[in-house]
Length: 140
Image (cartoon, helix red, strand yellow):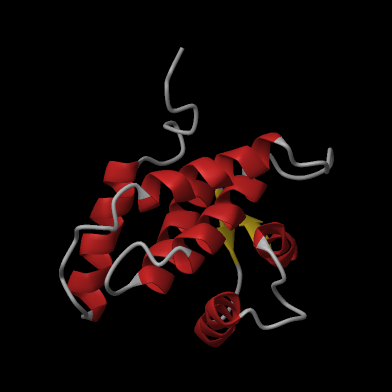
């Protein structure tokens, strides 16, 4: 049995590479060493939310993708680029599932800022991220 049941969707190494690419492309502190265990805890919490999701009609993996976005932003694993890496990791998971999100850059920025600022009514918790994503999903 795989010790990381989410490995087919994303891994710590993939998230570290996404962070490197985000910093190289958009700027910021290139320090790529996250807080010890932070990325792993964020992935694990997102996977746990997926496993215990109570919506039988939900797209498989959507809760994981949304919660990964939430936890990577909220846990502030990196010195810089947490919102960018959270969004990009979420999009990587959705891409793997054959999905993408239809939203403007302004909507995405506003939403990611709402996560960090605990700004209701958009985001009161990790699962609310999946609720925001769901109506914006498009098949690739």
